[in-house]
Image (cartoon, rainbow, N blue to C red; front, side, top):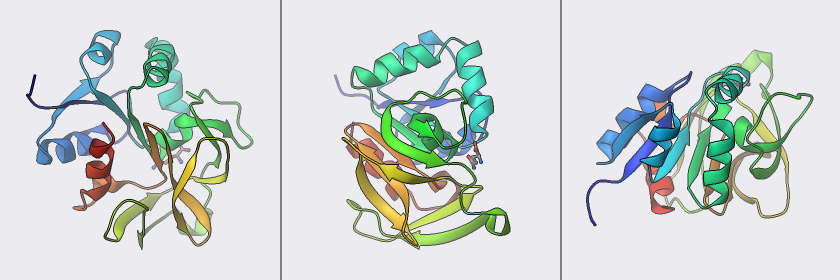
Amino acid sequence: MGGKRRIGVLALQGAFLEHQQVLARLGCEAVRTRSADDLERIDALILPGGESTTIGRLLVDFRLGDLVREKARAGMPVFGTCAGMILLAKEIIDSGQYRLGLMDMAVRRNAFGRQVESFEADLSLRGIPRLVHGVFIRAPYAERIWGEAELLAELDGKIVAVKQHKLLAVAFHPELTNDLSVHEFFLSMI
Ligand code: GLN
């Protein structure tokens, strides 16, 4: 077979362009994903940051949510950053908003508080030998994980990276830095 890996980036709302650029730097073909046809052409999918309520509503409007869920359950690797992490969670604390509900975690939105709407931090992430640079923007964290979910990183005791088989969720935006290690880590899961 060979050829470039085709990685979809859900392009309904949010920071999808930056993910495309990182994927291109890593030698992948980045596929803007907005339709069922797009979903058929990809080996894995990235859910970008943005506004999780908006992306969730658009997943319903574009009739993509059920398809993404089915494909993920059938083994398609999915990587959610920030709002993408929220969409992957089974539980969103104090919110009934739409979610894909694929990962065994309860997330809290905008969880670091108003005073620290955005900040940057270096953190150690299990499976990556160097410190990872993370940009946090009105970021969530996981208050609880259970079942099959595996803790990958914490910041000040708060869970900010989680893996569950072929699903990866991080609370920060690795696509906004020059640090490609989290994307490389995801590609190694494919
Ligand atoms: N606070 C946003 C939400 O709840 C997520 C922010 C982000 O993706 N940078 O959806």
